[in-house]
Length: 553
View (cartoon, rainbow, N blue to C red):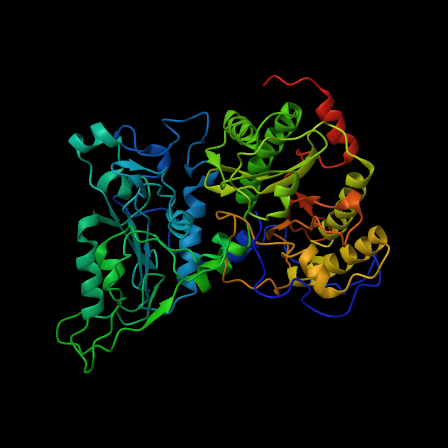
């Protein structure tokens, strides 16, 4: 799924010397960067939970909760895991690492999401705030996580959760909940409270500030009321994928009160008799995103599984493609085939763009008939365990590339494979530098095909997006981390060059209206990258062979 650059896609001026351009090497890094970063954390006792708590493997008899557990879904989870593939120890290490980055007396506030509604009483499938998911694995709506750092505690911090209490009458309608008991015994909270008490807690936090700063991504200041409140209507313009991550569904308090500051003067702090200071509020995302940037071995394994599910779904979708079908048919097939292999859902609304529709980067209408002789571009991914995959493939509707289609396709594929090989720590390159290389190489390919000069301005129209974005729990992961950062082992990125040739007399007739993008998810290695989405065919010979086989659809 594309993430567009805010500037021209040619980011710097010097072109590469060729496909084998040399780059400086960087220092080596351990094979598991994230867990290696955790290794210096010292626990005064085992990094489990408080003395009154039980680990996930021995969940008390609460019955079902609102997400899989090892006892209810042994086919998905192993003992000791809180979510599929991620253990209670890894979640605890994540929290410990986060708090090690915060000063003593700090408070971290992470609010989960609520349900979004399509219409009266009809809600969309729930998707949790990924920061909260990263820190505790809790997948229910209407929740929040509070971490308070104190060196006097054995754990080094106190973990409090605000959740929906168990309610027999409501659970008949909405299904089971973890409740207060599950938040403490299964998710590792030292304390848990009903979600309706969260506004009071936040008001107390404002009125009686802690010794250290408050780290949060909740509103820093109160926003004025608007007639559009609650509608999710955007008035700022820009394409849909450029919208900031935002949720208005937690409570009215969080939207309109926020972490307001007192006008002047000190007031009592946490402990009676002490004089506090004005509350200091800092953004949590810059710290947490740096932790999420490197993937542990368990995360990389989950993302490889997401790539496998989606890649094999692409195989079946290619096999089923034939003239006269609709784009919506292919949407349904890739969705079904992903879920049949274990995916929770698709990672995002897929692009299924036949013919000239591929010139629209985020075309999601997906209703047109697929025509003989056209290409179809599909951008889709599978989600599992909270992690996402993101794949784009382009193939001929009738199963055979024309010579012009193959020419453009091979140009994009050659550049994509070259750029994937640059995704190593030893190359010491950033995503922006790889973008520049892809831009210049595709420009050379266009000049060869069109038999004329293609300047930078024209090339920005032919290749109008960035080659990459971070990927992980979010499809467009960790947005505050610059793509100018040097790649290091353990990071996960997409590599997705494309060419989109307008239906214009400026271009040779055989190339007009062709849109091609090829995208894979890549785990950055020390010397060798790992393609996480390798099951999806992308060589012309493999695509055509795949499409020649009979389909079961």
